[in-house]
Length: 367
Figure 1 (cartoon, helix red, strand yellow):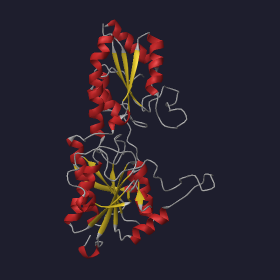
Figure 2: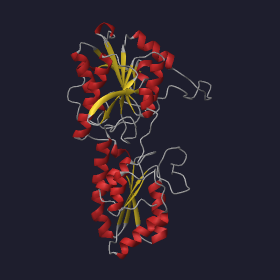
Figure 3: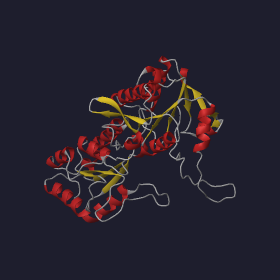
Figure 4: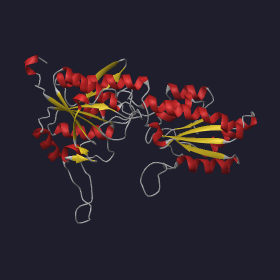
């Protein structure tokens, strides 16, 4: 775009939404430093969009001047801006003053606040849900550049999302530590990892951790097939087994497990352990890694990818490339249309090379 047509940028904002992921602070730091290098002001919005609508959030100002707040945060987990998994602006149904529930849409108020604050563009860091919100705001006229964030690595437009490699590293270490205790007690160990709709964490960590069975949402399983694998190992004097299961995995013809009364995925490890014990007579224990996969310092790969994404997002703003998401494609970070980026979920291919590799090594997928 010719320089005379590029937008005049003086102030940008950054927010983080959805579940946290290792590397969020690295994105914030990179985007802030890149913006400051261009002479722009940088505001951080606390807890998604809450900081725009409230003077204070959790006892802190809703907006944060990031110019002197990003030193030494690349290695930190979490996000200095806070986040929320309940930030859907479109179709929320919060409790009304009279005690009833009803839909609300604060997006017009948010657009007004962006104008009042003189914010010329937003760097929205989030997963598919948060980026869908950002895309809707873009369609209402907000200059937006998205940065993909999800430990599930399930956004189709990018080869990798930051946080995924750290989650895999955490899960792999946990699986590896279970081998010795499982063998000592001759037990079956069922390890539940995150992955509601896709099984990337289960697949990568299970393969790296030497699991005997890996269960992912994309490949429905049979308890009989899992039991057969355990019995086969018994015949070969391998009297323990390690099973890695994604939280969204399901039996053939069945449905995923949910935490009772919450609508959240969970409980698959306990249900599966009871079924395996009944089918094999083997003592079976469970480990649910849960949010430990989200916490802690990002591994170097995630730090570097996050830094690249943050700098690329500011470059996109400088070039006037709004309504896009930065993405890793091959070895390069590129910009892709935001509307397309949030519609394509990247699922484990049951016939893909990684699954085939695992099968050749004797891993069962319960099918």
